[in-house]
Image (cartoon, rainbow, N blue to C red; front, side):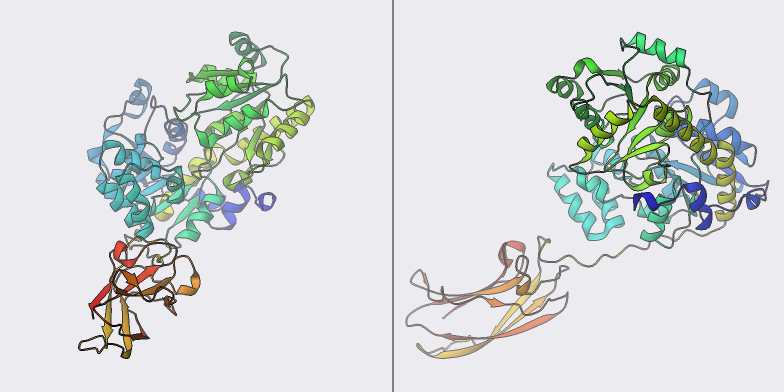
Length: 555
């Protein structure tokens, strides 16, 4: 599958993601946009993206830049764009163009986009991290649960509940993207890969989605002198192969996979340069010392743009593995490629649109590290192959992510979508939960024929009627774990006289509002006795423990 996907430049036009180039020239000059995004000096790739895109976009449409509350704006941005207060959003018929990312810098963007329809450029397909930071991170649970439930129905409610008790898992952050309500309130959605566009269209066909180029300026090719100076600055020998990992380091960037690969035979001289802040979730220092490669790993922390450029020039190859992914097109990766450096990427999702001539695709799973080590050992011996990768990488960025073409595509998409009505907040209804996964049941249990008097020794046929009144589907007993059956107990003098009797199985699934009747035969024992009929989830709890019915009768 990885090798069959085609680059954005060819696929997006075919699928309606971009207007043909001739149509871009017809964008109406009166189109007026309110541009809403974090801006430099905010440490966000989206702030840098906006600084690059705005000059080209402003040549085609009337752009007014808005200033987000509580975020700084550099003097250069103020002097050039004169940002307006967000209270003016949408005035004079301007169309909001939101830049949406998955971190707290975009909290105000999210709030504004929820309140006023516009066009959203979705830089990350997953927005769950932002939601969690803005709710749970502030000590507030209810808005988190409500938002997840609105976007993901009962699954969202179930995933939210453990957070009330302090439970935490990365699985929910990526499995539930928390974007549906936001996107359905917009006139259109822009993304930076055909893969992301296809994903959103398949999930929600009512969305108007367009794929547009990222817009990466093509800088001069890497400066060898700057690269040598940076190696000298950090004490990295001039003649050793050097890998580079760029940007904010989190577990999903899998830079530790590259660290572990350094221990493989054939890579004894290879160094790794990590350029960017390291998340507290990663204990880099401990791991590199544990593996014995600390002398071959250099961590710079956050650096300015000049040092960033020099670091790219210093490396032979960029490592940009990623999984799980928020569906983002990595601007930091494209900037590295733009100066002529090939990249190692994960064989997954949006990375499939990068040309094989410019990248090494590494499979995910147990073979990731051995495959990475083997391919690096082979490639790093071939300076000619490294140069070929670099040339192809630079050509890809020039051809596919030209800022001029990006601005044209954004303007054309905004023009085409500006009068479209948002789909609205129609909630997505998922198939109901079942007794296999749902921790609560509601229903009734009626028993006919057990009324007194009931003579000792008399055998009777009782009719049971079990009705599901809850939201979970009750599974038939044949499903095994999660299936439902009724335990029948006849208790006398502290013993269950029916302990050898099989449970009465639910013969079919019961949806909400459905009922099932059973007939069972019981003989009244001598002396006082109690009849107890208790539905149970097989492999789990009794209905009584899950809020469901139980029937008791004194005989």
